[in-house]
Length: 457
Ligand SMILES: Nc1nc2c(ncn2[C@@H]2O[C@H](COP(=O)(O)OP(=O)(O)OP(=O)(O)O)[C@@H](O)[C@H]2O)c(=O)[nH]1
Image (cartoon, rainbow, N blue to C red; front, side, top):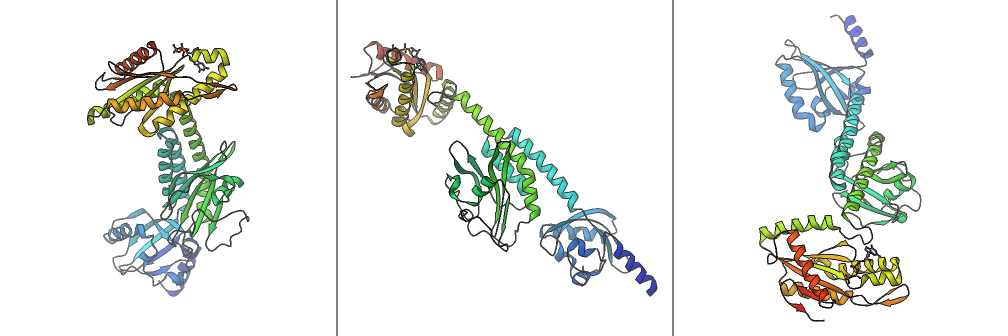
């Protein structure tokens, strides 16, 4: 090739949209065409003489070097893809075709910027993954874990959290919060002025970079994710308005967020919001199906499942259980004399009192009407079960005001023990019911242990 031809070829290469690169046997660029500036952000002068591998994304260096060996071995490399780090820090996806020359021991490669295609593919994959997670995640926490993984596939997301706004309670909570330095913040009012609250209130995405002048409304405090370098939050938009926010944060210069990340996060956020709404709806339906609407106590179905589980564990660990069957004495009379609403209030107060006494010693549920069940699962002896039942009797027997009248309603309580009185739900509940019935027959306001002691009035 003469000089004239060299100059001609060089000017032709400079017209190409793809970048032509020549790398010597030491792995340094000896030629790059003008398009490199568009693709890599560096001018040819900045690249020529530099080791090629220094420009490659750190995670792709090992496999890139392995490919270089294959190129020298003469294997044609039509479509090798890897990532480079542009001068501005952004990642660029490159599709290469490369060959080596035996004579000069040089590699000639053509680089095509396929970042847009890669981005579209990963966005598509992310959307699909979110919609799949919406259908398969078993609860909200499982969904958040999956979303974290999906967002992590689109951008660095080591520090990631989900903020949710409960409109009824006017409360902002952080049900999923993964952070290098901070524990999950406590729930707070929406007007507490945090960045995520601001994203939810305004419905606008927010990207705060350490090098960007902060132009925040005066009410916003930087008290969530303090000391972050970059903070990127997008609202979770639904037809009813924003229900929360997705946030990624960085603490080190290795991870910086850009407008491009903002677009990506915003793109998946609508699908994520729909997935969260769906999970919340499922959770509400599951709750309704397993709780009593008047007292919000577990209903018979949930009690049954919970007690079956407790029986399994008790059998394995050779521990005791106690079942307390509680029925109010003369409840019908309250309904008849003070009205159904007063009866409802009494049932709600009974539930609260039972919960208060039982605390962490077990589970309280409502079987229906004025009948409640308590499971004591702390390996109770008969005396301990009797003691708690006695406390319940005393507490329920304390007066309360209904329809402006002081009312006192006592309970009858029957106790069945595992393993003494049965080893399945049906048997135990029947025994506890019989004991309660016996307590009621002998005048009510009593605790009776199946086949056993009656506590005095
Ligand atoms: N207010 C109200 N009443 C209910 C509800 N569910 C059932 N009841 C009523 O509760 C009453 C339960 O009947 P019983 O257990 O025979 O009433 P009791 O007067 O306590 O009878 P003993 O148990 O023999 O002392 C019935 O009158 C039902 O109509 C409810 O959710 N709210």
